[in-house]
Image (tube, rainbow, N blue to C red; front, side):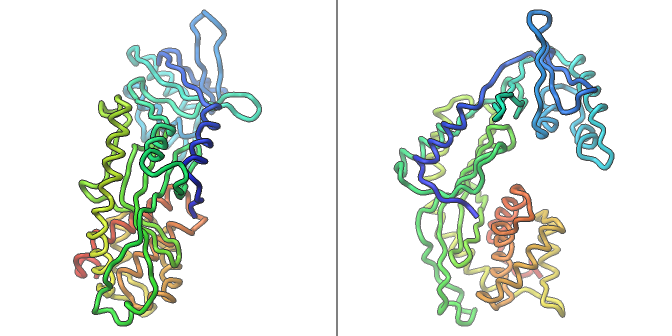
Length: 360
């Protein structure tokens, strides 16, 4: 569950973290992976100084094809994450394609560890545009104030994900669903902002809703409301332009709440077909096929489906939506990426709540 902090406190945490980070622009020709030292990258200084060797974060293997032309990413992934990993062969392949590559700049992003050593946390093309977390937080402070509280959904070496709550949704429940209007089922509305200074994903803002009974959260990717800014595009080369886009997206979210209240009402009125065990098999297949919900994620969703029966006895799409977002909020067995994916699936389910035929 997201930890709640003030924007000013988060800003200070980011500044403390920044003190441990550093960058260097190098030539791709200076990079070398020693097959005898798997997991390390050597920066060769070509006779001017001593070579330097650094431990790499495992995510860097996935970034190697971005800096060397021709290196097949799927092959590298197989050599590192496959059933029979072979980091020695991955290193030799990388060195071969470095030799084949033309001269180009590479951004090396370092992190200082507790023992004083530095590790490589990211390797990106020299054209990749860093956007400091502090700049975006300063934008939010200007809009909301330093004491405004936000939910920190994720803050680690991979990325930063924040939930902003703007107001409580005031929506009419579906009159076809018995007794729902008598229940206290408040929902908060806002937006989610995310970024990765380790090069894992774009800068995004998207509408965010949270059900207060269980604190389940969901994001939606509604066209015209969300923004997605690639660190590799021209629009991210201008820091002021990036922050302008973030401000515009945050301001558009409030007006989108009416549409979301309608989608919630639609979801409440869709009864799902279930099997003899009360499982909505057809809808679960939709989640797997169209929304890429894995078997492990499905197991947690079905467990949450049973839990949600207490507050939503109807076998409705709304109940399944809350089961998905419950799993995406509370299932500790799932990785942060898997939980965030389920929260986005929950939002997508609301966007697809216009037809019962789709789900049955």
